[in-house]
Image 1 (cartoon, rainbow, N blue to C red):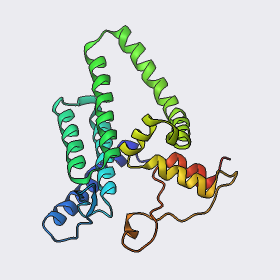
Image 2: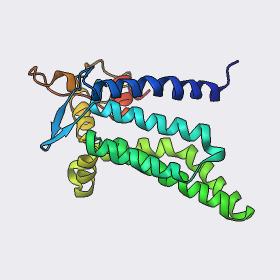
Image 3: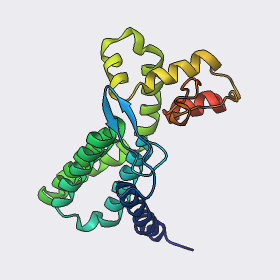
Amino acid sequence: GIQFKTVVRIYLYVGGFLFAVTAIACICGIVPDFINYKDDHIRHAFGSVYTTVFAAHIFYYVLAFRYLNKDDFKWFYYLIFIGLAAFIYKFCIAETSTICILGFTALIFIYDLVNRYTGEGIKKIFNGLADLGGLVAMPVMCAFSLFATINYQNHPKLQELNLLVGSRLGLGLNAINNYGIKLFGSNFEMTGGDTWGTGQTYNFVDNSFMYVLVRYGSI
């Protein structure tokens, strides 16, 4: 009987508070900072288990904040979102979360612009298209992820996309090549950044579409 909005509010306030306390404790040296390097740039985790985990948490809090404040969303909130994206890009080099925050900010900016400053006819058409986009977004992105993962080595633009999203297309292709796409999936162990320096090979399928397809199969 608990409303979904209440759940989101608890997640944002309680989770966000604990997240902020952890990050501040890390900055103050109370808890360790998991640091790694990318192209000679330092990447901080600010108390999280990995840099991209820290960045992903910020993206989720951005989503929750927007959901709770969508009916009274102030213009300076967009600047805060952009600032958060810049922060995690500078200190975490987390490209995917940065792209997600900036893309989401652009979408809600357009949505708010149309719904606040256009006529009812345009609003109706736009909101209808937005609802349709919400329905088709997941299957379209799933199909694109599969196509891009399998074919990225043959397309320069997809190779650039692979670099932009932290080699996630390459990691997905490695999983397909190593385990295949089976009817009922394959049981395999993923190894992430916590194995660096241990001699183990990094093998973490960050693309959820590819992970579900390889791990659980096509059925």
